[in-house]
Length: 150
Image 1: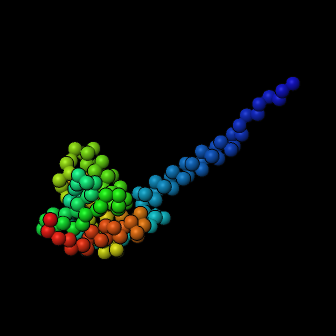
Image 2: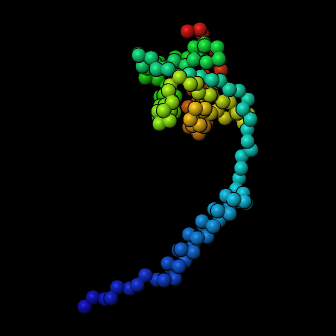
Image 3: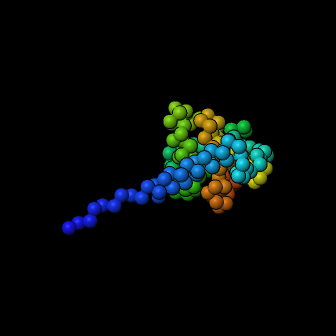
């Protein structure tokens, strides 16, 4: 003889739905009123540099300052994996928006020390410090590099 299956406790089910409802309501109140949230103050851009990244046949990537045409750096084949990964992601977004490779990217240093790489043509934005200081340093070098005439 088998025991009859016991029904799921109705009280536990009501409690679970109530807890979910309170969580959603709390998030909604916080988002609409700002109560219980922490906001970082908006930082101002203290330096910008418009850069064009172009692939070469040998696998290198050239970085050019579009304002004066100076070659800022050459990312040798097999190096700078983080920079190449960021650029691949931005290039994918450009392809999705049917934007060519010619428009420049904007490298921005903010007053709070952060760095970001932005694509004005697609609105894509990468906060570089989110990937660690070592990775952000690759782009910090591009912000400060003097380069040479190609």
